[in-house]
Length: 97
Image (cartoon, rainbow, N blue to C red; front, side, top):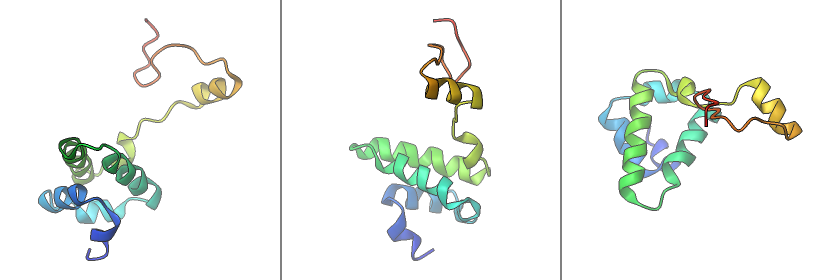
């Protein structure tokens, strides 16, 4: 855990420590951890970074980090590559605009 202090934003380190979620965090793949590190570090405002860190710690504690990443379905990804993706909301599946 000592090395992790250098690998994650301060806000994420503190949130994972408060939630006692380090063991669950370390069970995730490097790819999943990297997604969350980038997501937490991106905002310029510290309050937004803290909020994102708290969300990340919550999902880590419950073992749901990988499931919380919203990925487009295979079909929508294929259509997007072909430039024919629908204009619906791919996050929720809502096509009513």
